[in-house]
Amino acid sequence: AGPPPPPATSQQPYVLPLRGTSLARLAADVGAMAAATARHGKFMASELYGPLVAMEQAEGWARLDSKPPSGGEAVTWLCLDVEMCERRRDGERFPVSACVTRTRWESSVDGVRASQETLFNDKINPGDELHWWDDHQAQLIDWKDSVHGLSRQAHVAARGSLASVQDVQRVILSRFDDTCFLVGHKLCSDLRVLRIHGAALRRRSIDTMLLHWGPRASAPGVRQLLKQVDAPQSVGEAHDAAADVAATVAVAFFDVKRLTQGLEIGPAFAPAPLLAADDRQKCRVEIPERMVGRVIGKKGATLAKIREACPQVFVEVASKQHALKDTRLVTLRAQASADIARCLDAIAAKVPDLQPVTDAAKTDLLEDVGVLRGGSSFRAV
Image (tube, rainbow, N blue to C red; front, side, top):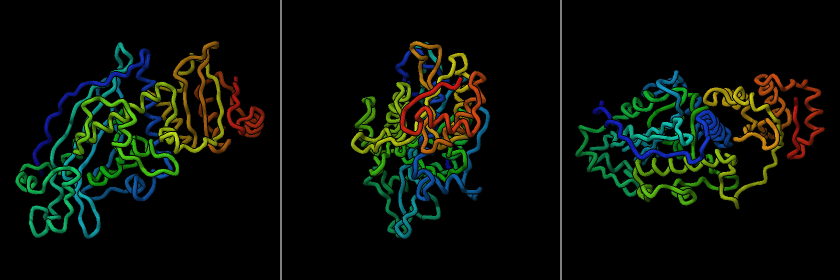
């Protein structure tokens, strides 16, 4: 085992620039980012998250498990990036360095403030099975130093003090709880080389690559996305793990600001010329303002459960009360009206003011108000 990871270091906090934004609303929006990641058509692909979600316990692998949060009301991002080398004969990748930061969102007088700290930022032993320190064996490895700038010679010189994959696993697992989301750009690649898996990835992963990967387009790079956001000046063009984490956090922060402004998530983040027309069926329902908390729940927990129970449905709760009525608008979008109907039942179970609709009447109601034709609304009270 390598030495203990370096101590966490504080960084300049981000501030959510909207007064009145609550931590509960932020939790719901961050949960929506994770839900949009999991709904992406490529999420469960064999080269992305599918094997990591379905994998049973295996030697050397660490499984993410939910656990109660520790200390205070907050929403947490664990953002990570790993630089890698590659074995030439089979293309398998191994870590050479990693960076893990924690962004902790808490309520403040401004709305919501997020403090950041670096939990790990160091070189890693790629694995003794590679014999990477041996000059003859090194010919069998593509070190990729032209990408990350870390030479094999520097690794050899520091061999006795390198951290291990298990050190990074412990850093992540010790901070992972029910308030935490993993954030990365093509996060699955980093998790694979760190040997981290678990069904929780389907609920707790925010992948900026998938959020911005629109139809009929190639997967965007984090530097490509960085050009579209208002990133801090400290986010430069370097390509080491820490710089990539900073770039990913900047993109994710841009995305969550979009959500607080009521903009959609998912492939809608893709550049406008690549967007396909949204042909999903849409339904709007108004909920009494006093009942909105029952739909969102503490730290967004109830809304997250509704989204998890109805994964085919995009659920969006308006950030503000209706201008003329004491209600809040909830928008549902899905390909099938039956999926929308099931989601309406889940919402009605939380809001007594809404009358549950029978299956037969529900279909008639959806057709009558034009839900199948894109955009009519109704109020089921």
